[in-house]
Every structure is written in C-alpha cells, then in structure tokens.
Length: 253
Image (cartoon, rainbow, N blue to C red; front, side):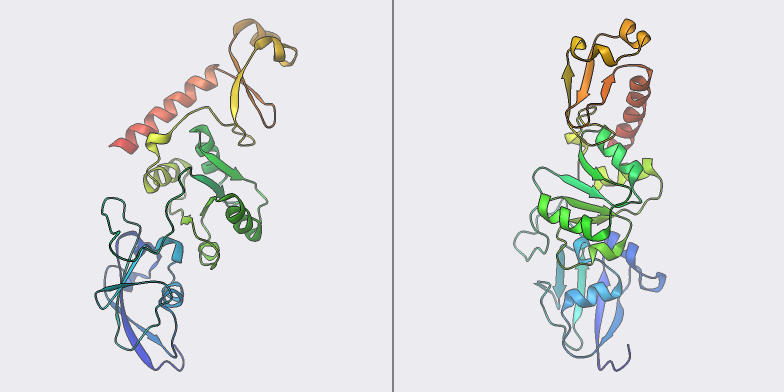
C-alpha cells in the first residue's frame, strides 16, 4: 500500500479463506495501512465482505467493526458460528431472520427456482439492478444471495451470502447447509414462476383453463395466488419428487 506506515497481522478462518489469494489462505499475513482505518474497512480491502464475518478478535479480545487498527495488532476473523455459542463475546451479525426470505441477483435464476420449489420465499428478476436488490432487501428484510462480492460490501447490507458454487444443484445444497434450512422445506407451496403462494383450488373454478387430457385425467389442482398459474401432480411432479429426494439425501449425509 503506497504511503503505508504501519502493519497489522491478519488471519482468516474456515470459509472466509474462499475470498483470499492463495498465499494468504489459512495462514497469518501482514496488512499494511496508514492513518486509523476501521477493522471493517481493512477486512473489506483484503477482499472479504463484512456480511460473511461474525466475530473479530484483536490481540485476543473481541471487537466490533468500528475498532480502529493499531500498529502490530493481531487480528483473527471468523465466519458465522453454527454449532458454537459465542454469545459472551461481540457478535457482529444481527440476529438471524426468523422467517428467512431471499432476494437473488441476476446470475442465480436456477437457484431461485430451486428455492421456490422447496417452499422458500425467493424474489428474483433477470433484470435486477444492484441498487434495487439492496433497497428491496432492506425494505422487506430479505437475505441477499449473490455471486457479486461488491454488493455484500455495501455498508447498508446486513444479511447476505456469496454463493460459491456455479452449478444450480450444488448451489441449492450450499444454501440449505449455510442457513440450516433442510428442516424448513415445504415443497410445492410456492409458484416457480412468480414466487407467489400456491393453494388448493376446486377443479370447477379453473376447468375452463384446462386442456382436454388434463381435464379428463386429473381432479386435484393447485393455483398460484399471485399470477394464477395452475399446477397438478402429473409426470413433471414425479420427476421433481425424485430430484428433491436426491437433494435431501445429499444434505443429510
């Protein structure tokens, strides 16, 4: 860093290493700085979004994001703890959202479809702008799922996650594990098209919209309360059940 006067030692743990260059992974390294930057600014300058961090210890003591770096500080940075109670120290993340709802960036359309299939509130448009995602996440208390680290570095973002995987079936397993969602799965309760809630509907109410073969072979129907799309348990339903069973089996291994 040009004009840097001081050095601090940083060490990142567990999945936070995904954001680091190879020479910094799972090892302590020096960070050069001048002035009095906050530890949050330093962490994001290194490349780790603040939304991924849940605990910072400086010289063995927990601190918040506003802590100002000092020369020769030793900084340990940890991700969200799932199995360990760290309530006695300073947690940096707000409490988890009790009823998780998500908003996904333009790169995660297939993941949005998977989340909806499993019954999770997942807002998605293929023309979302970053500003819209951030504003809507704040207004509707949604967790941002993205493959753009820059979104998560915005100061106003409190709940977000950088999706590592590139394939949709791996992405959904990653998100289910990260947010411990497998016990909250309620398949076929949300519309795959618009994210609206799906409810049972009497056949007589939608019979005029059915094709002759569907009308003759099926009696149980469901309808999206948002866009009006009609669903029934045809061959596509059986195929999705198989996909979901395979997915859940992998999650529980």
